[in-house]
Length: 546
Image (tube, rainbow, N blue to C red; front, top):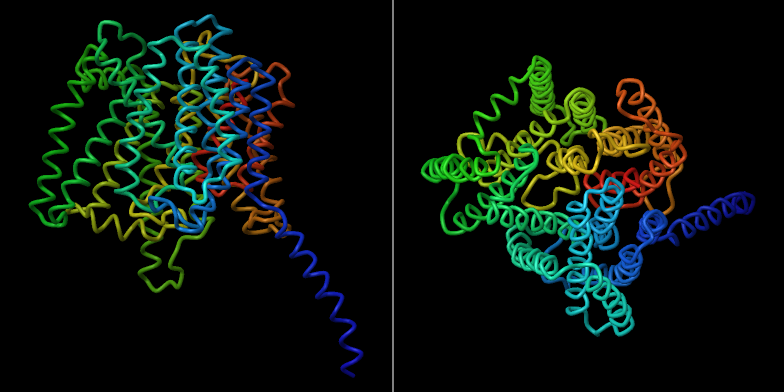
């Protein structure tokens, strides 16, 4: 009897082992890098200049260095504590700023805007230098010294330095060095105060972006006579710098005193008011040539459409708050579910889509200002939660604990902030001065919608469909092929809907490029372990800009 059973079992076991071995042989980091390489080659074929060749050299050195960073993270040899359960993310993070600058330069050169064309070149070179600096750190602390990787990094670095010498002026080189200096000091502060909050790649992208904004704001503050442009564009830099100053100041202060007392809380509120009303408001008024509150009131009251949009957004914010309260009530009333499910988390993605689509269709400037204001509120509330500032600190901790996931392994809860950034970055980065009548031709018409497509629709559909009906997994990951396929399909349907309601979009027979761009970003979502809410919109933004 036993002999007749054994032959029937062995083939199943052997096939299972073979399938498992085949699955484990595929390295998701390698697939992620392949997708990024495909994006780099797309940009290179569209731009084809010295900087695009330098971006290929940067990718090669980042690919080799990423292996050293991953080994450092696994062995615990990194100087700072990075986010666990994720690879270093050096390849996708290293390429974002250079590719973004190349795509912007191509658009600005086509429109004849020389100033923003030079600015885009500075963005490209700055991104390359920041990535090279992070590579040097990894190679410097790796033991034994990786000779082959050092040689490759040296060759790539030499090519990038030569290109920089050929393309930048002396003042632009100084500007790049200023950003690099700010990045060094800011990285030390952020990674020390916020352990396990970022991977090396996420730190490169976030701290590098903040460093660039800080440098630009300082540069414009020292040359107020040359300040020009839309006042809307100055709100974001002032909010970012103000939030950074507030966070660093209180993080250092509360190292020496208790933050949960009423005295500390009153001091926090008082200093926040002093920073906002006494420093940031006058600073912003220098750029917009008017008191910010008066300007904001006139801006919102300009027409009835903006008032309707504002009322609609307040209603959606109320709905989101009710969802948070309802989920916490269910947990307290005896539910066994201690964490919100994937479907519940994606409710917020749908709410954000419902928020951004009307703003993009009817009034993009209003959406720009409102999203910057929302970022300021989110950061302030996160400070209140993190420092346990009374009276809301402890309440916010209880309410938001339900929505934690594996990416919130550090002291900060950043998931909702990443969602806001992913939806807003395409709106904030839209090259208005390089777009005739505020509209880009072809696939560029969908550039402001990159966050909605990649995060609001694509990531949401992939997560919900993959977790509910997905069966076939991509090799080496937990993501499913069904989720990726439905994600691509849903984004294509969304593009068709945008064409109906937004008359400014004219794709001009670029449908195949749009489908290919969406598919590439969907594959990146399936294989990346970085913050997809942050990376996916930026890569789709770059591809749609070409």
